[in-house]
Length: 229
Image (cartoon, rainbow, N blue to C red; front, side, top):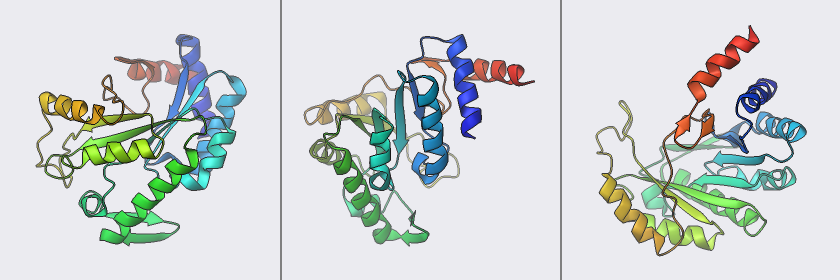
């Protein structure tokens, strides 16, 4: 709940006063539950106006809430864009649920890409730092990632973060091999000719606390739980 999130934040700031950024990254998509997401951001603004606010989303509902994000002065938004071609996107997304209706196959892919484009254009040039996360999925979209970068730049993005697929057991992509570090670096260099790329990204929990490379989430959550007893 938003109030619980605020309490955790206040406890984190007491332990780690250097914290400067607060982000909502999950579970699920942050804009699939907009009321609680925006209430949480309002509460954060109320106690620490100087904190940088961040939000991660798949972009499906970004256009609908662009004005609210601007009102709350969310400074950093990450949109996951794995393709700008519906034929490729169809291999990545099984379905899309939009305004109470499910879309499948090519229809789902077309809808998602159109909505991502619309959302990014609504925020282009509005003072928000826009980052694009692109999952590198060998055999699916690796020959398409440079096109994603070119389109991202046109849509106003400042940075592209290429993330290697981490195959999960039981998932559609479980048999696809994770890209090697050299392959990832080669892709970053290729994309770097189009737009700046992020090279310091580290896999972390969506409830990470602390600093880059020093996630204190496990010890902090244990500490926070004791404070609530």
